[in-house]
Image (cartoon, rainbow, N blue to C red; front, side, top):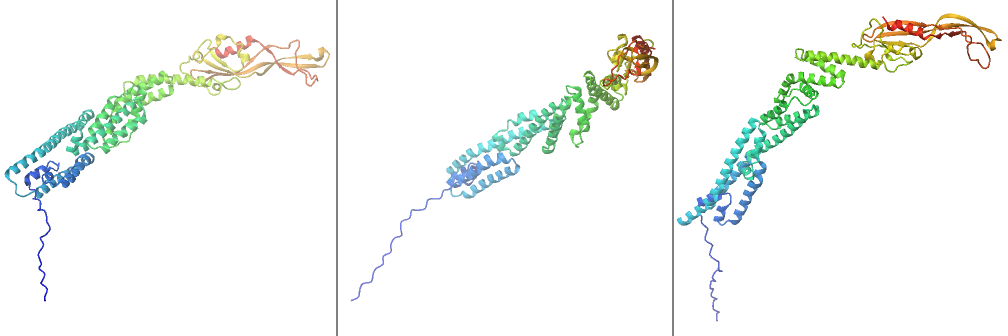
Length: 481
């Protein structure tokens, strides 16, 4: 008996939920909504992940990249990203959308896009206005006005106009450098070459590294030049000397040398006068001579010549006084190397007062009325040598040991000295003679020393006892005419 055939009964397929209806959105609405840069179009399409990621990119570009990169290139990148979002949203959208939904979506899109785009446009316009003002300030060299306007550049303007931020930051840096350079040059007005080097180097740096700010450099340089002359003529002279020696740089800084002929004559005269007042005779003389050499037709020529005369006189006086100090044997260096002093009185008839040096024994016998206390009151410098033996005047016999010993002959001599007299006014030698002073001789007794207890008798030659009147008489021939 055969078994019955199995009957196959088809099983129904497992239950699957029906696919969700596709979200439809108006293409134009999505594109306009994405033009807001807020990813609103993707939200209309219910693409939350895409909206989040695209918003992150937008924030990264606008908040981080644009304010820091500050180039036209980053602006192009942002515009390209904006266009990509618009086109991509337009392509993703589609489907049947009833008229009421379409109108509603477009209104929403415009409500988001219009404020953003309008705000960016207004910011851009404001940035352009500030940029033009700053450009005008740069062209007029007004750093203060430029900085006042650049202080108005806030974060939003940096997003709206990146190139403006670049130019503005460059101007800020340039103005800061110029401010510091101006302060340095103000300090340099005292005549510091170091500060001049620093100040001009800073101006040169702005010219080299900050193109477009030449007028601002001119303004800073003009401020320094207008402040000249400095507070002290010698300081101004250092500045003009530095400007004269400064190597040409081939830019606007070279015109600073043009003020030298205007400033230097007065600076030379004033500085020389201050040296003269401070008894810096050689410095005064050199500075006056520099004026005559560089500016022979300057109105201060007569004053400079008078100053040179006064300085030369003071230098001569200082040199004479220097040579009258020290020396050996009571005679100063002047006695071997005289110098002149033009204001001293010349040798004339009558008694010429003198400064006496050397041989204090004989000089001490001279009347005080012949002696000057300082070179300014003297006519002569008289150098007196040591006592030497002069001509014999008498010979006498002496017996030693209380008149009981051997007889000895003793010859008495005048005292001789070499005297040289110099006229201070010219430094020339006006008298060079040997004076011999007489006096009493052959005293009744003489005193002498024995040698090792052995009486060898008195010395065979002795000096007379010099007469003070004869000393004065002999010296009178030197100091009187």
